[in-house]
Length: 269
Image 1 (cartoon, one colour):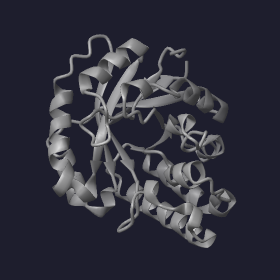
Image 2 (cartoon, helix red, strand yellow; image 1 turned 180 degrees about the vertical axis):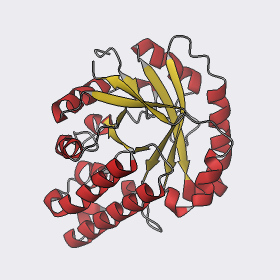
Image 3 (cartoon, one colour; image 1 turned 30 degrees about the vertical axis):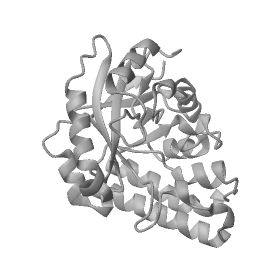
Image 4 (tube, one colour; image 1 turned 120 degrees about the vertical axis):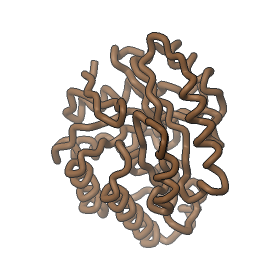
């Protein structure tokens, strides 16, 4: 890593259904990379907590509790997907566990599949815009709830609509809603994540991208976290250096990691 304080605060072990490698393997890779801080954030899709995630959350917590990080700054985290679909599940996932960091994310709208599965290439353009409007509204509901520390991969739908399906989206139609989301984050003192996974995928940019990061900064946003969204050792730390450079370009001088659910500001160097 070229940055002294390079930190990866969004990644997954095999405690997530789509993760490939064990917690010890991810830890070894974090040390090999020379990360300053590493936060493991395995999945909890709240609407599937009863059927699929209760045991995984317990396992992930136990695995993290046993980590001996040595000189690495290690933090214990979780990614709460779709918390508004089952707030009781979200609360149960957090209850009794002293997490350092909680990501709030939205992978699908209620009663709809993950954006990953949507055939955007065969959707009416107006239906796509309506889908994005519903996405922003649900994000606003999440921010009003406030049970997380950083909003994960804002513009996640574009990873699949634009990146995988090649369908361009006129984002100028969504500037007003995006401003509402960014202003709500500032007002609630929640962080915005720079998710670097899009840099290694067809999308070709971070989620959110540079113009949105600049707008967030202009609206007073100062809390920003960085995450590779790696699901294997090979992707851990990827794009973090580029993300830190992007933040500097957007006007930031510091970024954020979380310990005991409190922001810790670090220089972008």
